[in-house]
Length: 464
Image 1 (spheres, rainbow, N blue to C red):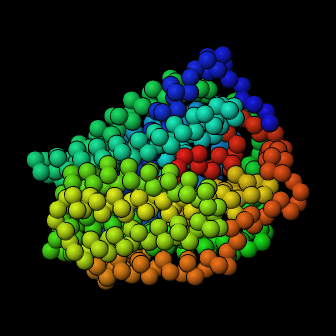
Image 2 (tube, one colour):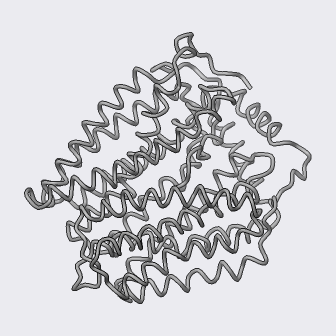
Image 3 (cartoon, one colour):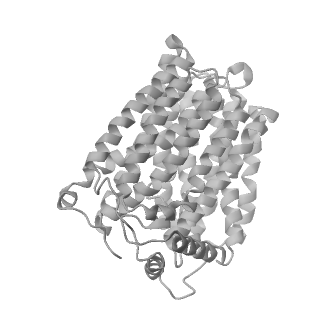
């Protein structure tokens, strides 16, 4: 593979001077759309069905990003893409602060969120490509943990700190003014981070001619997709992936809204500040702890033997929210303990799907690209369940809705005996993954660059 040409200053620059800021921004933009937006719209009086429907549409950005990721190879400088999209995100956040003061705030908010979502998804591709192209294999592994740490640090910041600030400002300023202040602050913060990254990221803020043709990229992408479709048992694998997240998508959409819903409407009636405490801090710590322990548990037991337990762990959030909706506790310690159990089970069980895609679906000629496609299917399944969750909850009410989600976890258990946990395509062609990637590069005109095309769509951070 042709290595990217880095200056002496780039080689001497420690990754710890740019990896934290790069992945914090990646997480920051993601959680604005997929976490903060739901709480904001709820407090502004938008119905659950509308919130679920629109946020699910926004989530398609991360599901379908492999479709355009290869074409980013036509822009040689991934640093230029990263910094430009961070600047676009900063402007969008500042525009959001102004739109919330207008009569057409809802339509304007959705438009801005779409801009942030698709800009963020494209930023993710270039971001991971810049990381892989700027570091050798040893340093990629050495700093991979810092990627996840600062991506999830953004979750702490957005849900635990920013949401808390919004909650504290809502009473004295009003909901709309409070969130305008919040987005103004986030926009200014992102301007600062984008400026820092423009200076500190390796590479150049300019691009050069790349001997690639869009037709060649499209041809190789089609080959990758056709190879994915040809894997034996792939249809059953896709069904398993979709059903695995069918209950989760509904609970993770409605659960946070239930916490903030008024008690006379069947919710717990928590303030925005209280939700930030239990979901932003307790919930995030529990999720990360569950994820780590779930990984060790699966490594000890093997994926095939661990999968039933992991699927049952995914039903823990459903059962926890059903318990909360049935009892409606008022004590914050009681509620916090329930959220801790819920998010721990979620993190513990979710490891199963990541490892299933990695070990059963992805192996073959285009391993990393097929991991990206499998992750896209996973996200689409999540979006499908998320999009219908609001309408079902409005129809059933909170208590019966969470009971319904418990039954939604049964089909994936029934399907499990028929699903292979080993590689669907054990390199039947005899071509290794490395050989497949080298051949793909040749088909793309010898692109090494600073990002590996469709391959860069695979996440190098924990999936959230």
